[in-house]
Image (tube, rainbow, N blue to C red):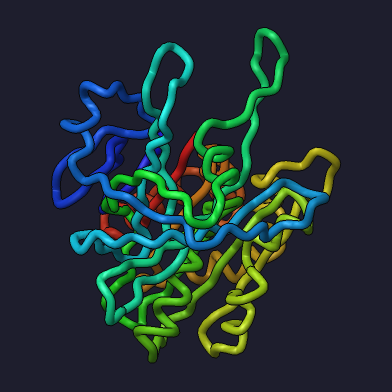
Length: 315
């Protein structure tokens, strides 16, 4: 389940052009595929590059080329991937959503390029204890350049860059939740330009090796560190078997003065992305800075009401 908070409303469904779309992951049959996903199209894999060392979880950057003229996207949006079956329980299709990790580009051709960050996932059956591969992530990670897949969307996102260039952007995330933030940062500095507000990225990881999520060898965020307005803070869990949320707790605790100062500014917009469990981590840390849970919830609710708080969280 994916939960979106957009302009004060919590949405459990996707939005596109003002219409509600069914939440992923969705298992489709051949009979209702055509009627349920009118906005589907073909995409060809141009490149698939592993961006994490072999000693840690596999994360790949996929570059897809879409030649559908009607397909256009903006930063922060997501696409769905339809994985052909058969799948368990007789389902013909499996649908999974991924954030677009690159900003839009003006191209002389009709083709559109999108980047995805995909972690190869596995899960443990609670009853048998057996390990099974995640359907969508393994499907995507196993693709070869030239292969074609079916995608849906793009879907409307709760994340929108403010029009006012003096706005502060406070981005907080873990894992591949950093994907929309990569697109944000590249867009405001490469394409908008003249950004005057502070841009801060707080990122938590399981281990130091996972911090490569922030960067890839060919086009990383590091060269933005010289911008007068941009800074990134990252940390990983300090204990064995630490989770990404542990890393986030550490980076926020170590830099709470920076984060809290921004939250006091009425020009600050907060963007939270990652697993559902990072939300209570953020609340717990900021309660201490606010002085009480009530005061923190009042500030948080004010930001939600003013359209300055957005979440993209998933299980």
